Amino acid sequence: WKQDKVTQCLKRIGGIEDVEEIMEPIVGMQEPLRYRNKAQFPVGKNKEGKCVIGFYTRHSHSIIDTEACLLQPKVFDSLLAACREFLEQSSLEPYDEETGKGLIRHFIFRWGKATGQIQVCVVVNGDVLLAPGEKPISAVGDSKSASEKLLVEKLQKISGVVSIVLNRNTQNTNRITGDTIRVLWGSERIEDHIGEVRFSIGALSFYQVNPDQTEKMYQKALEYADLKGGETVWDLYCGIGTISLFLAQKAGHVHGVEIVKQAIDDARENAKLNGMENVTFYVGKAEEVLPREYETNNIRADVIVVDPPRKGCDEKAIETMLKMQPERIVYVSCDPATLARDVRLLSEGGYRPEKVCAFDNFSQSTHVETVCLLSKKA
Image (cartoon, rainbow, N blue to C red; front, side):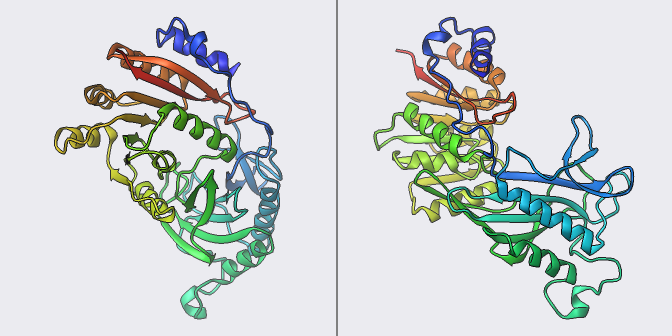
């Protein structure tokens, strides 16, 4: 069904008549359960006033109390139980979206599959976990409140937990996390590997949620890039540098662009972590950085890799890509409709779609990822 979804989009929107001839078989999952490495659990109260932790119902912010989820590693069930026990014993109030009052907003779990390291982040409407009547941190002369010590005590018992952090979000917004992190126990970050590349991941880092399928997808992007060792490669919408560092293993030099400064800080740290000096990262919009570096600093491209958000590539970025005339463009997409739209624009600009491969990275959902190779027409 997902393969057909990609095929129909490329045919009807992208105008590729022979799409079946260039489509490789979709890469499915060997194990379609327990694959996610991240979970976000909102906290609230039900109609009876009982504290609940779980998932929002569809098209609503009503929370279904959840004890387990088959898409997540088994250890997350234990973390969820520990957090629920902590709330029952601490008397801390859940956040109320309507009134803006209450303290606990979300629990976020992250798991490095290759390392087994786990991070727990509690998002709060304030600066500290402080129950009613509890003395402030300054009064008890310690770096943690009694409630924070209780949380650490419960989570420490779970194997793999190496990082417990507090995230401050006092904004009345649907945004889950704020910008401030405070370590309650352990390290501020966890580490994971995708293939041979190591990644340092913080509470605010973007990181693909399905590590097994991500490695297969990035290997396919690397295969399509067909690097020999001396190429200049641009990686647009690079995030924390996951694809950039994969490419840097075989490229002459990789230039990564991302609008989120925190992500670029992570990307630079990840380059250092892997001892990769043939990468340069830029903070800014792809549609602004790419023209500037090409027209002002004459930085060209042999290969361009793009992994844009669901809305696809900006039109100005596509215009600059066509001006730069790379030999190959590798398009990684999370939305086949915007992929097809952009493939049509690139085809009209002188590029021929040569190979397409879809990936089922989100089993039990309708989402599909795709990697497409476009080569410059003779």
